[in-house]
Length: 162
Image 1 (cartoon, rainbow, N blue to C red):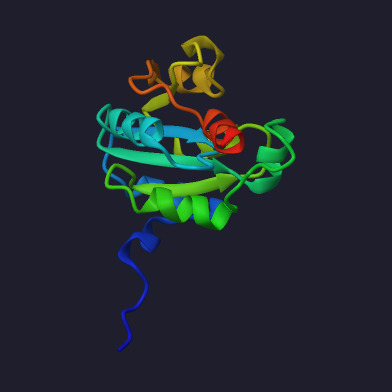
Image 2 (cartoon, rainbow, N blue to C red):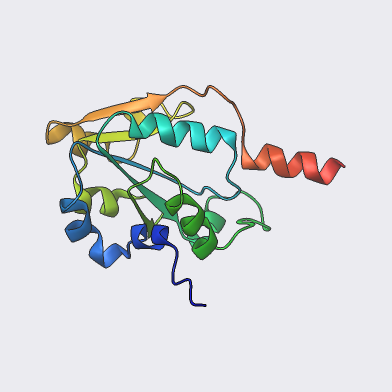
């Protein structure tokens, strides 16, 4: 029996297709980004909260090379990009998942022109990449406080100690 590709795979979006695919999403469009290496409760809570700020949520994910340049450690990312984007695409709160190889997601932000730009509470709103651009076209920028303070780095440390 052929079960076909899971429906969530339709939410995966190559960067070259982002502008067109984002234009077809319900607005206001919310944009966030990150590594999302080992998905945990903090991530899924944050993504659900981000989605609640608009009608559709686009998530841009650092490529493996981009994660390595962030200095999170030689063993990071633990999960390859194709796995990280697939897990994110399967979440109910996520409308579209794309990726970026640059050090910042600015190009993806410019391509999809979100009305709402969001990062987690460890980012002050004025330091969020793309904030001047989104504010410039009349959008909003939010730094969402952590309800469940978790991190992949802390989780990996816990695993290593055991």
